[in-house]
Image (cartoon, rainbow, N blue to C red; front, side, top):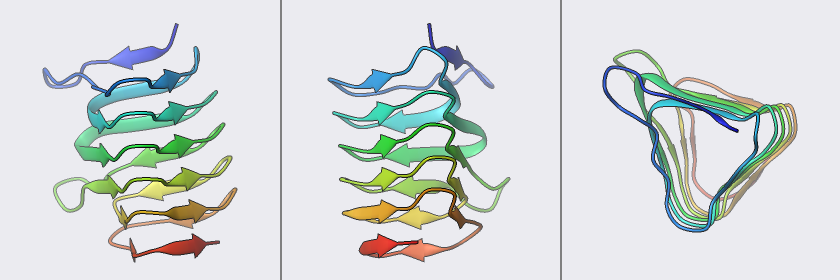
Length: 117
């Protein structure tokens, strides 16, 4: 069973046809669209701000998605793939982006479109 945690009265939510691996962790203010996949050991932690994910977002094994306290949400567009062990923190990734394995995007970065990494 996946690790799903409420924080400050807010639970993660997701759309239709999503896969969440048994040991993935989602907590707090996390909103995912339809057809998303969250793979093994991924952590999506909306504890200090919100994380908004579009449709068809693929978060691969070991990736970490977080936000910045009182400063920056993390917003991920549609058709985005976040590679193994990548870190996405307090930034915006728009539609149709492939974010490579072990890359790091931190505070206030804004990726518009294309391949990053």
